[in-house]
Image 1 (cartoon, rainbow, N blue to C red):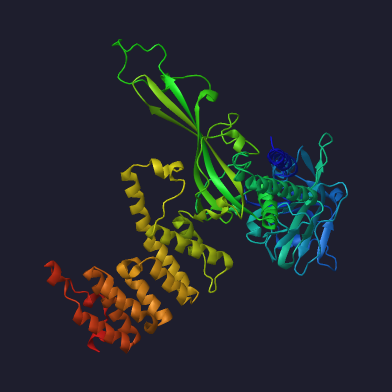
Image 2: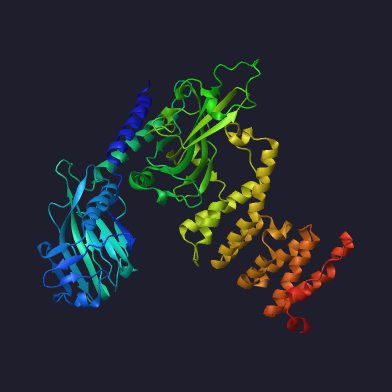
Length: 617
């Protein structure tokens, strides 16, 4: 094996080992949960020199506490008793388990009560103090009516971002809110603007047989990640430059199977990742930018086709029922004996935008193509099992495992250059419908350009280099025609989205590019008559006159031409635009009536669209 080929194998193995060991932290540094009244037990507190404390905290009980000049009252645990056994069971059971899960603790923990803290209006003092033996802290904000700012937890270690904010004031009188964070992080308790805030502070303490806990320091793992990817890149480029007759083609990408399973949809992005997957994605993105890699995510399905039959079936026996039940079919051999197939359902960039990667050919599933776990994992229950009958006594069971992988591509490579916008109409609708910016962000520009490119690719298709590897290659002519009709029907919605963006951003150049790429002058309905009227209001009639005149000449539909003129006539009257009104009158005089062409009388829309006062004028 050539030297660089060996380095490639080693780099791949080192990367897998590194991710499994040093990027395994599957938790967060802080979290919060709000429980409505009834979902959390009442602790039934009794405080020395105060007596029973009602929950939700009332004004009478609140004024019974003695406050410092910082508007704070701290009560030690030996002066407090809990009258509810359910409270301690809930704390040490439900909440301790949540802490273990969210902090990804490798062993169990318990919660040790430290103090009661009551804060009143004007208090900005911290609630919790650092304890050397504590793994972290949990604060229970009991029901009490108060207003105040959010709590903020800051981390020095980037495992799940650097800061999280929690709102504990909203519905404070009707809920119990817990806030938990790792030791080593800094809590800003916020301020109390009105009312009284009551909190029980607990330390998170590991049990005797549990290993030590703590947030991982990612500085060294990131350095190792940088080194192993740089080595893989250098080895790949060296193989690419070698004689192709001697050296086999170098790998085109690295594919890392994520730990969790994610549903693909228009809202999916790297922000959807959780735990260790989120940690890996964030650190990998930073290193990839430095080394010239591109990152994408792919939703893949590993399928195993298994033959089944009716044991002892005799085709000459007439005693069988008309059709065998699915449960009567026996599988031939084990799952390992089935036919494996990999299906790439969707590839998206880290922001969630669908892309097509022409050079990413679809091949039969090979476990060696992936690191950090197989796609087809017989140790896990399949995500779906289908049953298909072949003949009377034979059938197939198809077991499907759904996984998400991170694809690592060299930016300056044939594979990287083959990336083009994919079927992104649903994504664009989700993305743009939630935005109200008056100036485009860099991400909005990227999505807008990609959507324009997708429309252009549909209008002017180019044969894919690897069409034989794509499901499209195996589709019937009917399926292809149906797919084309479906995409054609979605273009007007995409054009509307882009035109709305152009108007919101006051971007006339973008607006005309959208009209041109969609060939709207040949079919006015693509942009819509209301869309043209809206654009006239934003950009002015003077700059749109030439396009409208061209559309009148080019669009073959007489009905669409009349509809445009009628709509612009109304717009001209509503906004007193004489030049537009004159243009509409000229077009109306030149256009033949629909009845002259079709033999049918075109229904008048004047009484529906033009106000009576305007018609009289």
